[in-house]
Length: 95
Image (spheres, rainbow, N blue to C red):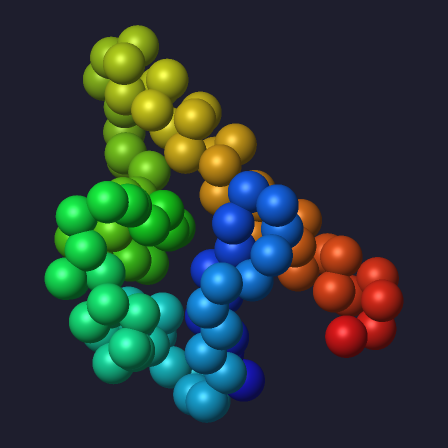
């Protein structure tokens, strides 16, 4: 099963989609989610995602060519790790 998860800075899940088989591409899941529709109508926030979500949300810059791009990738990685931590907390409790 492929799972789409959004977490806030407090490790709280704010969106969870778990209805697609494991072979489903992440971008397809997002494109067919209520979250995508919701985010298209908002102007007060951003979603960060990995490279599978290119052109749909803020993703890391491939082949950085400047210090600014490296700084962006570093900040992006530090922010995205929140989701990994939230999932780790769930796994540690057997959820």
